[in-house]
Length: 192
Ligand SMILES: [Zn+2]
Image 1: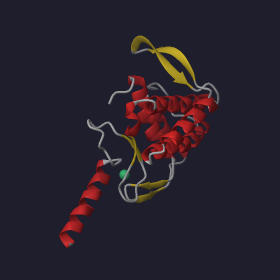
Image 2: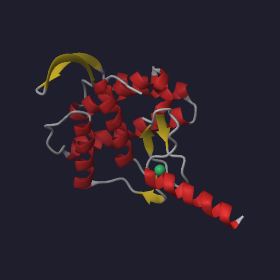
Image 3: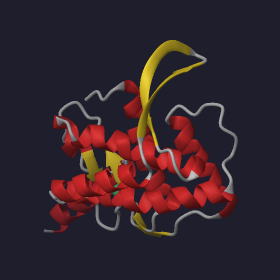
């Protein structure tokens, strides 16, 4: 799987944001979303992974704005995972409209080539990145890789992931979840 290289990082950032900022279950335990400085740092880390290398720790307001965006982004992953591609399309289109996403040619200090970025243009830094994440997901959804947006299938886990496996057969958010399911299956077999 290969998205445009910039979208690639941004799609990963979207998954990191969703997993840091939305409640639910993670790897067998109840997940309480991060707050305060831990949330700001996790949001910053997600944005850095999408190429915002020189970003300082984001403000509480930016973090809060991205927590709200993360709820919508989670909806996109869950819609795809449950086969509701049309719901995913609607959510992504609404998010791009809400953040007034526009294309802009940019280049970075470490890379002299110009390339197109899609940025949210309202709502400050949070709106900018919320729009960018929605646009990156739109590229995935509008491609044969749409089903690569996943929701962990292990019991008591609802974390999202991007399936970057060679043949697109990933089912779990993480190795711990894969191991939990394997162990449970082994126990079930040995007590049968
Ligand atoms: Zn999991």
